[in-house]
Image (tube, rainbow, N blue to C red; front, side, top):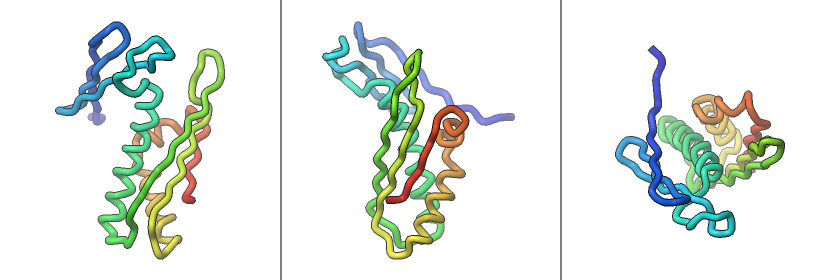
Length: 133
């Protein structure tokens, strides 16, 4: 049987919603300039955070499992919006960290990329680039 991930989203105001994944909740809204009340990130921002969180989780697991000397990992993600209807046509992830062996870090990034469900899903839909900076 295939694995499943389930979340629920419910309306909490004229513009905002609250999402629940397991025991965690997060608000989602538009900024005031777009007719919202700015009580949380927009859905597209959460989408990019989901990619970053999934990738980071896999990267940190790979680093821990191999006892690699890598720390202070950060991922900056930019989504380029275009088309009609508007969608992300390009997503760029720039990864930075403290490490001594660039080859080892590149290997960890490759392992994380292979294990990231969100990245694997996006690769066939958008131009996804993952760069170690």
